[in-house]
Image 1 (tube, rainbow, N blue to C red):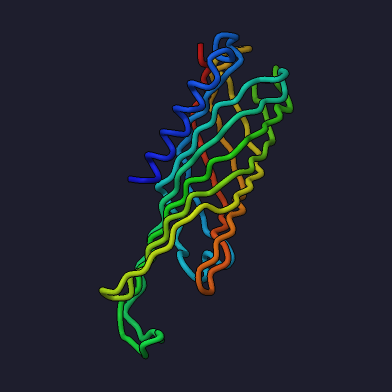
Image 2 (cartoon, rainbow, N blue to C red):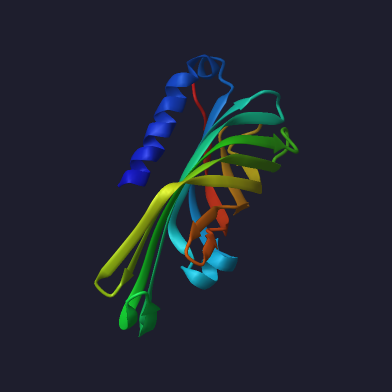
Length: 205
């Protein structure tokens, strides 16, 4: 529950902190369902399965008709259980089932550039940098260990927005990104992953 509380608190603070922008009708919110696919060290050491338990949302202010800046937060939940086998620990060898549970909550400052602001289909590119709240729990049989903390995150992205009507601010969004997420625990060095998302963008008045 803690990652969800952090997410909602972040968006709530952003909403109260930007009332003037909303009154100018230049503030938009984008809410997306997201899936995440582990890569590299994350995939080989911790979780190889795609997570279908994720989402993200952002508040962006239009500086121009192409450039927007704002805040984004997200959530993803990874879990994998490995069959029973023999593992070597500090206390010796143990035959057990291993399970890994990981939750990430990235909170980033975000910029997005719309390549065709007046088009029927509007491609865009963007990037975000910030902090990543990580909660990791590992169970080796009945013995558990955990680590949590805040780490760096960077996330370049590309996608498209399809307005529901001509020149409208509301739109369907579809995109992909690569999430750079350093994380150190034993032999694990990162939680890097590919993300795909789809959702709705709408103006805040």
